[in-house]
Length: 152
Image 1 (cartoon, rainbow, N blue to C red):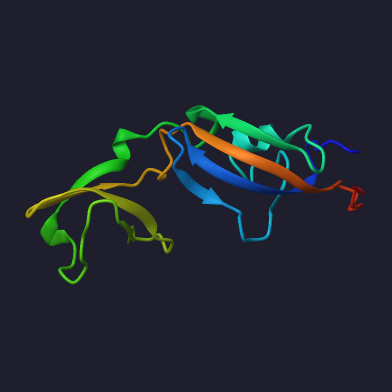
Image 2: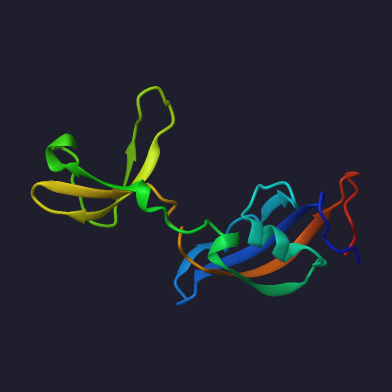
């Protein structure tokens, strides 16, 4: 059976957890995740983790911060005056807001980290920045760059 290599398109089922067991994502009940190995479509540790797997293989991939979303960047945590956020937006610690920068049509997701009557601390880091990640992965399909679907 062919092993997944760089350039192959693979389909995987997965469950992603933090090291404390908290599930942050899963393909359960959905179609498998499809990506091209080595193309940068997924985080480096996940990409590297599927190399050498064959269809039907299952494994646990432990991904350190450096090969996941990187460390949290303190420069991406900032405080605004509460009055700078429209009053009709209800705020709660942990919620995600979308900010718009001048000239950038794409919103930037930020997480409310602290909140009081006069200020709001927002975090524009990826929600999984600074975290080691664990993935339970099952390779369910492989397609070589030639487009030939490899048999089971």
